[in-house]
Length: 102
Image 1 (cartoon, helix red, strand yellow):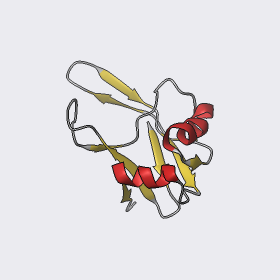
Image 2 (cartoon, helix red, strand yellow):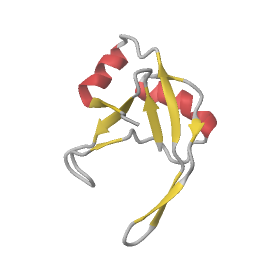
Image 3 (cartoon, one colour):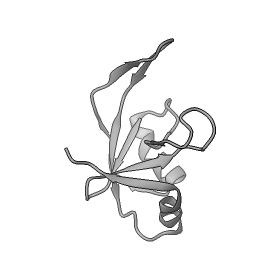
Image 4 (cartoon, helix red, strand yellow):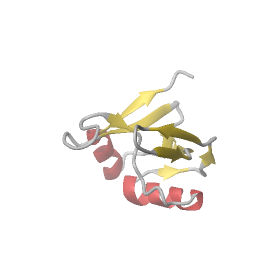
């Protein structure tokens, strides 16, 4: 699980496709769960067009569904220089940024 946060404390969310599990809901961006912390920066740049800082691993936790347990290891990455690139503009057409109030 990646948490992408900009300098204003906003968290990047993406809208899930209308059909399928949790259709139409907003969620954190989904990246390959097999990626190690050292691969997250490059993957964020390649897949999302975002320049991110080093990942900060957050305490992991387990979420229990009715038929299985999901082990989650969140990593927070600071988004640097989202800029005005075509990738950034496309990102805002399909994603929403929420402000945290921690």
